[in-house]
Amino acid sequence: GGITLPPTFMPGVVGKRHEPVRILDHIPSTPMEGPSIEFIAHVSTTGTAGTVAMAGLKPEVVFNTVATILVARKIAAFAVVPDELLQDYSAFSQYMQMELPRVIIDAENNQILNGDGTGENLTGLLSTSGIITRAKGSDTGLDALEQGMNDLRTGPTFTTADAVIMSPNTWSAQRRTKDTQGRYILNP
Image 1 (cartoon, rainbow, N blue to C red):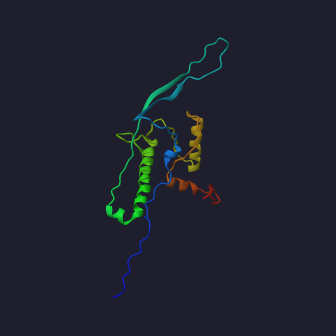
Image 2 (cartoon, helix red, strand yellow):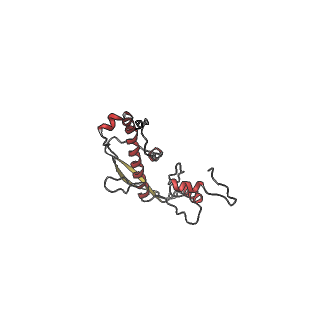
Image 3 (tube, one colour):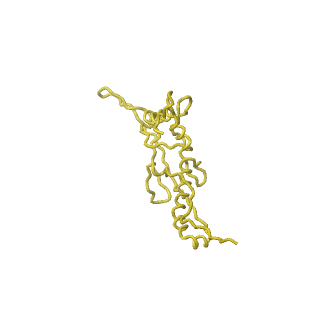
């Protein structure tokens, strides 16, 4: 018989990959002191200001508002791990402490984008009524993106885009856009 050597144990844990970006880091937020927060949302304005003659009637402007109550939602998880794993592999405990927040951030990102607002779900960005949208149509992806940013500036919001959230597949397609001579338009 030959000599049998024990397997070599690699320290650490080969972890699962996660989305590296936390969407909530790019959205303004306010801490809550209770289970809900109430605010007045200015949703539209009726009328406009204008020039008037001396002692003339001033145009009426009405700020249309909606009282809004947002209820806190909890995104949580717990881990079930055999005692033997924790006892035999001390690095696994440290790995779990890093992995659980990542699992929760993945769920949080999904809720912020896709939550349907039912039950305990958040109302995600893609389920929010009244948001400005732009169909790509026959435009290039880069043109549609730029026009969407312009819509924010010239539309009813009068704001400037400060973040873009898109699928990695969509971003990859945009980065591979080439001019008529086959040169990348964006830095690949």
